[in-house]
Image 1 (tube, one colour):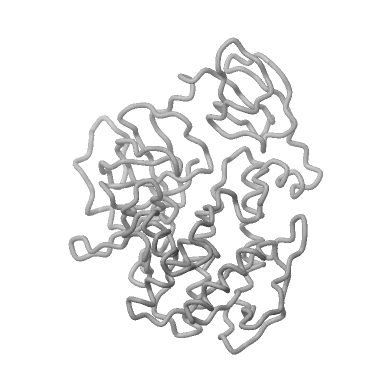
Image 2 (cartoon, one colour):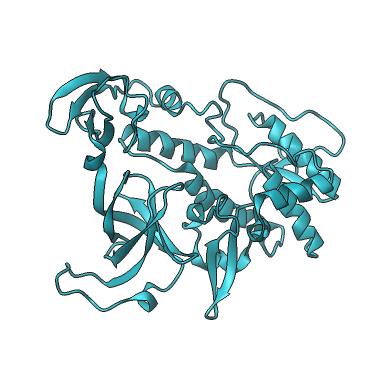
Amino acid sequence: MSGGVDSSTAAWLLREAGHEVIGLFMRHGQALEQTCRLPAKENEATEQTPGQTPNQTAHKQGCCSEADAEDARRVAHALDIPFYAVNFEHEFGRIVDYFVDQYTAGRTPNPCIVCNTWLKFGKLFDYADSVGADYVATGHYARLVQRDGQLALCRGVDSGKDQAYVLFGIRRSLLSRLLFPVGEHHKDEIRDIAARLGLRVAEKRDSQEICFVPDNDHARFVRQRRGDRDTSGQFVTTEGQVVGHHDGIERFTIGQRKGLGLAFGEPRYVVRIEPDTRRVVLGAKDELACDRLTASEANWLVDVNDLASQPDASSPPCETRFRCEVKIRYRSPAYPATVEVLADDRFRVRFDEPCHGVAPGQAAVCYQDDRVLGGGWID
């Protein structure tokens, strides 16, 4: 329970379906501009360290999500369900390190996917097992559907809020223990339910920023965390002409046009970031076009051998090849493509038509219709 309308309504939907519900708030423990504490109040949440059972009280720590934690606590109290704040400071520290390291290496990280994989559907299962819980449930807009005798991860009914993309890293073996109660609803339905219940979060705006970067200034956050390492360098064109200087590669991502601080006669985009030389390469939009990518650390939610198509003699050898659609970012469309499964948990994507903005560090997620087949991290 994050304190938002989706997870709050999910808790009610689960309770109405007959489940015994325990509400959990994940504290990241990252003290940024200030240190916050939940006020001492009646029915206040007990803070725990992962692995503790509900009657084992841990030392209370500060956090920077006081308002969200308080909103979640109030909802749990209104729904008459137990509520605990779980201390994941150490685990969130790993995510922060990943975030900083990726930007410093000229890549574009997606910490929400990493959080889902490592924490919400990773460490949180350790907690669930410690209290004898059958399921872990969240407020994600996604669905689990029986397809051909298998449980399939599918897009949420509300295409505008669908979050199946950020769930590709879940272990296939855990699908049977997941619940996504809001995935069968549209966002306005969820807000209407919360309003009818009298929950104060009914009109709370959706969070658009990363939880440990509340001001959404990624570059400033990375600079604060990276120490004395210098990532400043040159802007160059694709022809190699130096056209300016920048103060750090962490400010940029592939496909970026705004915020370059340079004037050209026509739009210029970031087409490549070179961490070794610290150069940011700029080009025209058509120079962003990409007809293939390679991804690693693949996680498949289906048996890819069941998807295999006939090999193409003109293509390099691979273990398995199949047709699907591939998303290269959370907000990107899904592009028709052929996927070739390679060795060492890698795969290659060959797009039918070139697409724009393929960024190393982002996730390439494969779909067939509304079903998530799996994905990996773009190299």
